[in-house]
Length: 148
Ligand SMILES: [Zn+2]
Image (tube, rainbow, N blue to C red):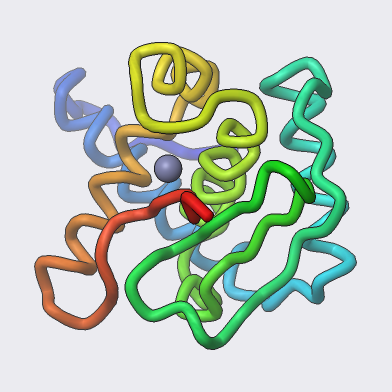
């Protein structure tokens, strides 16, 4: 429940709610998931957004991935997330998970791929967040599937 101060314009209100939600998300999210929880999370996300069609065999953190946020090997159903995502808001980690899950269904970044990700309401926001991190020069490039 969010208490909204009186006499805010609608635009102010939306902005304020956005800020509050970010704060809440940040508080909730900074716990580090283990590989097992990460796999369970990926399964739940697949269920929720892709009708369970993406079935990852394994999902794990890796520390050797400096130019990508995530990668996957569709033939094995394996997904790897950069440990650099640890400590970022939950919705950002969820986005990267969904991105890699989507690659289990659709290779490459064509229209079919992005249509899948439209199901997740925070795709644009998460991409903006990651781009901001890259622009700040602290972290690696874009998310990409390992085209292995
Ligand atoms: Zn990709």
